[in-house]
Each structure stands twice: as structure tokens, then as C-alpha cells.
Length: 231
Image 1: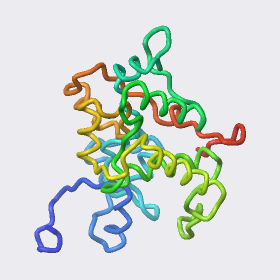
Image 2: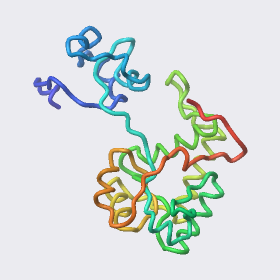
Image 3: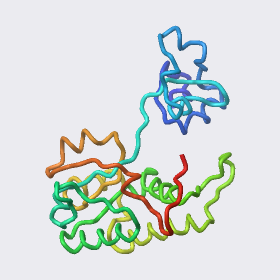
Image 4: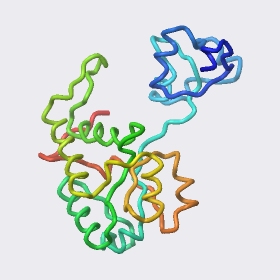
């Protein structure tokens, strides 16, 4: 809006996914020859970080963060459901069968949703779908980013998983970002799928024992034996 009003900011923060839109319209200044003036060495960046600020062989920014998705876990609910190991650590499922068996136990023993996420507002929930597809060795978009590859057996498996999650009342498909946070922080959900940016907030505000756990390990989705995970 500031750019449209003719008063663009000197510096702006944006997701890497927005970069092509702005750079293709010459709205952002290339910085390749300017980093040295500020003591910035792009060689310090990881390849994903460098890629996030680059477009068509030029760099346009400085990486701010790379935020991953996590499972934010209510340890008290996992303990009440008997889904912890001998050290008290929540036991995360490693297959579709284990996932829904735990979901059924959680619902029966505690009455809580097993997993909630923002299902209607931001693309947080969509990342579960992508992850399930990737872990089967497939993708929803071609490597060149020009063709949708949604109509595949792997995508059907992933969508079926999501439908079972909501249809089985193990989650709530009507929740937006704020509502999913509220459900988790008020003890109505055992797991919240959200990003790394929320860890400090949940650790500070959760009235229960809270733990952040790795998302890829938790959602290892292998319906027909080991399948390589891209990347």
C-alpha cells in the first residue's frame, strides 16, 4: 500500500514467496554489489536462506529467519492418555495407523482433539498436506513450478488422511489461526501444528507442561514401506 501511495519504505520485510512478485516489477533494489558496504558476507548463508532472497540470479535482501513447522504438544494430555515413554516424553506416531490409534485414545481418555491447526485462514494446514505428499516421494507442483501435479495416488492418500482427521472428530476444520491457538492453550487439543515463531509465546502462556517437537519426525507418513523424502 505504501508503494502504491508513492511513499515506499526504505526497508521492508516479506516472505521469500513474495519476492518474485516485487522483483519482476522492479519494485525492489538488487543488493549484490552492496553487501560488502555493510559488512555482510552472503557466503555465511545456508543455501535455502540465500535462495529465499534471490530471484533470477540476483539477490534482493538479507535473510531474517527460516521458520519451520512444529508440533506444539500438551504433555499433560499425552500423560493423561498414557501416550508417554518411561521418561515422560510424549510418544509421537510414526505411521498413519499409529497416528489415528493415538487420536482415538486421546479422544477416549481426555475428550480433547488430537491435533488442531489453522484450517481456514493462512496456509498453515496446507503444509501438512504438502508434507504428507513429500514424504511419499511425490510433490504437488512440478520441479519447474509451472504445472500442478495434484492428481496423483500420493496426493489422494494425503487428502484421505486429512479427511479422516476431520471426519473422525480428531480435529476441527472450522478453526482459523487464533482459534486453533486458543483451543491448544486452553487444553482442548493435545497438539497444535504451528511454526517456530510461536515457541516463546506458548512456553510463556501455556498453563500445562509444554513441549515443541519436530514436525517431520512426528508426521512420518509411509503407507507402503520406506519411501525417500525429497531434500
